[in-house]
Figure 1: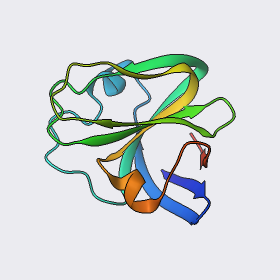
Figure 2: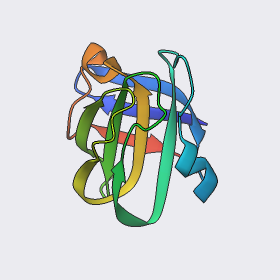
Figure 3: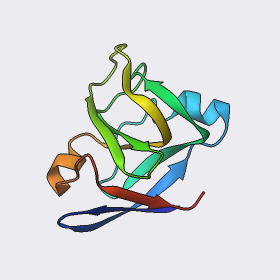
Figure 4: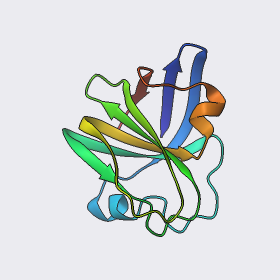
Length: 119
């Protein structure tokens, strides 16, 4: 599914997998050996919820991007492979986006940027 992040320096387009079921959300990007620069995974929340992620069995670093109820980025976490430390924005979110680690910084994506996708 296409996803666009509208930031101050332009639009950044990704093709993302949707983790729609409990099982898909539980597995996420675990066991993957790489994530392409223009790929990722979105975890939609309807209704919005306070989400918490960890990196158990995740082999690559990820940017975990928490998307607030206004569809703006609330928080970006730089998650380390295999870490059991929980990561959360601490606020209700409508989605969480996982991208290759460091990608948000490479593209200048920041908190407050608008995210659009169709689920």
